[in-house]
Image (cartoon, rainbow, N blue to C red; front, top):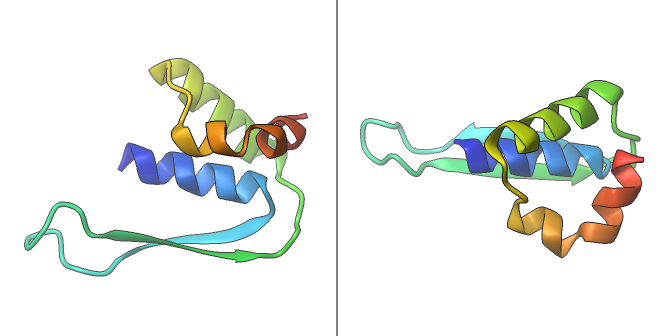
Amino acid sequence: MLTDTYRSLLLRMLGYKVEVVEFVDSRHTPRNAMVRAVRTGTPARREVRHEYRALTADWGVHPALARMLDAEVTRALG
């Protein structure tokens, strides 16, 4: 769940409309989320950037997706 939250926030910061969809009931499998994203080009809202910064600071992590997209993430965070 935390990983999907990071992915969702990162994609939102990079101009995507994001939905996290449960496609198999959690009673059947614990790993059942699909992240669906459509590029809109909309700049990230301040709240999204703040939530991402707070989450990474609280958990002390630097997600792999953020490392792969380092330049884009740095620009999005301003």
